[in-house]
Image (cartoon, rainbow, N blue to C red; front, side, top):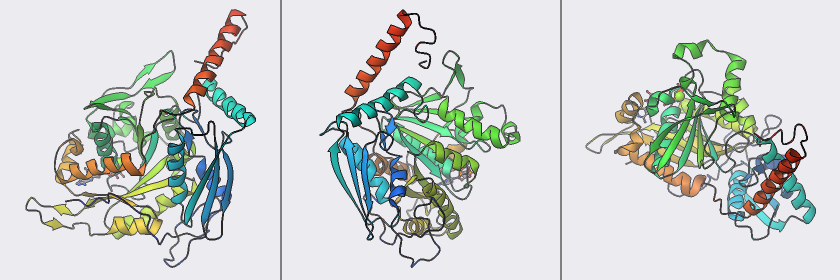
Length: 436
Ligand SMILES: Nc1ncnc2c1ncn2[C@@H]1O[C@H](COP(=O)(O)OP(=O)(O)OP(=O)(O)O)[C@@H](O)[C@H]1O
Ligand SMILES: [Mg+2]
């Protein structure tokens, strides 16, 4: 059976160092180097990835982060001011802040304390929320409440796309709404693996692309891929540089995603190139799942992907070892690509190992025929189901929208509508122009 750690702890020997400017906790090659605590500015950079799901902005922009202290022993203290004391969203924000800060090498403990925004602070936060509603462009068109998981690796061919598609299927099978962005513009494989074809249609009035949609049990997967835009893989191969960068941007900014998405999974291209850096910049709230194989060489390269993410203040939420031991029908295990790469990588980068997915011909076969193995049975299907369960319960639980600021956001939207209506009836040119 695949071994999935149901409850994880961060490995004690996290590595660290101060290799490059703007980087937090890059992994050094010295296994004995003790990690230096991050700078308060780094913690603030990381907190820009924590979104108030109802106000649609990050807690730093909203002025909710009141204090960040880092003690020499690595204890980080953060004070957060909420819009309303006793806000039910507090648990959500608390979990996100803790998870992000604790994932930084050199952090030994996280202490949070809470206060309430004063009247001026509330007005300022609401002004930001109002502006975001008006512009309808917080950071991207992705719903603010959706958790964003980037599936990345240093090396190609380790199974990112297989993991992304099967994880999407396993999450959707739990009744969740999943968005899936195939960011591998050159080597898109998601349409084939998911068994979806057909051009993406546009909503011309709104200037948006509609994602393709597959129902999975009570859940669904909405997917965009270059594969839905070009006729043949070779066409995409001819595209270069900026155009590709823009294609990924369009997937973030111009897609009409359902408002109720729980997770957005991004299948990243291999490596740490421009597309990866661009995505990391555009999506500070994204969390990385790093895929590696049991072999040493994949593990070494995967460290680069982790460092790239951390340089951009992304939380590394977990390591997934794919192509682990093959389990024969008689139950015997065969370590075809070696053993232990996932655990070694997890220890090296200070992130939890959250899944080991066995090698199984059905994974490749399901990918080739558009029937994700996660929707069937067997050791790999069980491993994907366990991974989905762990993500939902511990690694990155979905946002609970029964929160406190909905009332406030409702008031903001109503005020904006009243303003638009007043402007329209006064016949003022350009009234409400920025609202689609
Ligand atoms: N656990 C597994 N068992 C068996 N085959 C697998 C497994 N995971 C992936 N594969 C197969 O390995 C090949 C590479 O997988 P995949 O395309 O998912 O990797 P990738 O990291 O996305 O590659 P690229 O870097 O080219 O995008 C595919 O043929 C896939 O079906
Ligand atoms: Mg791939």
